[in-house]
Length: 298
Length: 244
Image (cartoon, rainbow over all chains, first blue to last red):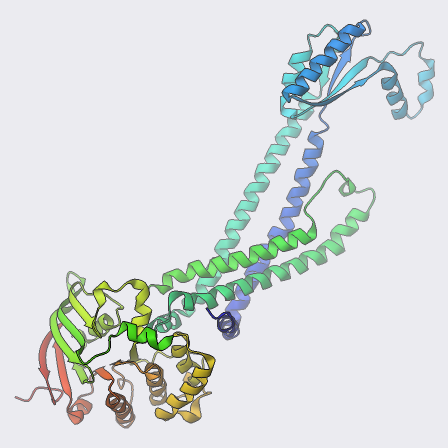
């Protein structure tokens, strides 16, 4: 193999077919740009939903009349559930903790001074390993004697349900969209390359007639595809970077924006750029290599 | 590397260059390209293939360069049975056979010298070898001054000379020309014919399919006439049509 010859051939062909090379590059640019804008948005929404899911907790309220042994018994039940993998973690919130917490949340804590005694119950705050299994945890602990009969075990069943449904929809819709985008861009790029090769099928025929092997003909086409793919993807990355710097970063800098929440993570720009350029190169190589196959059967 | 590969495909020696033994080519049950053709062409011969359109001349040529495979019978080129040839050896067979076509089959967008160089590049010839051989062969076909021109800047006759230079630059032992003068005026055709004759005098077997009656009559070479895929005449020092 002579890489220098093949690269020179690829460059010659890009120059000789400038219009079609430009079309292929722009096609890659558009596809990669859409993908590059969508992937971080999707990951952001996904991680926001995941963060919300983690906040779905269960409150097990303890009766004021429960004995220390009963509370310890409930605590060891929860430890048991933790060992089974149902419970991620749980914390004991004493009556005093609950009052302190309430005091912090009130705009005017002085009204608490009016209370003759602390009316707030102690509780266990339980974080499920998987919010979908909340019902199961509730069923395990709600009949325990330490649990307050009136207050019982509470978790925001409705909220949790809706959140989980939304999370599932977002996840599947997002993956489906990425899939459709990928397929559409491969088809689009493949089509452009097919046009380019179709215009040159006689040339491929002649090459075969003077005794060129299939790979001798294929290498320049593959390199051409890779170069167009990389060029299109690189342009898309530049465009994405400009938009990120001009719009998204300014938005995030705005302190009141929901986008500043630091528990939501998305993919770093450098990794995204590397991923997109690599995708452009692979799509270009596969697109031209596979399309050429039909024309090599002379 | 290039040279040894060529020799490995066409065995040297004085035996027949081409043997067709009972070759039938059926494209479809009612479309027969060749019908039980048997003939042989010796090394170093100059042969005209004549016959009306559809007589099987093109099929004959396509079988020689293994663009197609015979339905029945065996085609042997340079001592090689093409039926047994693996697909990935076909490019090496074609390097050992020079091909000239009626439409010149040049690579557009490449200069005259790049077109000739391509036939050397596919064999793995070194850039040094290419720089030496291309001007040499362009001088031989009389296009030394044209090496940087593009094909569409040349006349038909000049393009055909480029095509011959490309076909001959690897010094094949067999050269096939399919209607090489079909698109050219009589004067230009004589130049092309002389070039092919000179190539033949170096020992290269030349098979030329043609409709050019005048040319065949003038040259007085072996004439193989086909009609409906069958051999109707095979005569040495002959004319285009049989003399009754």
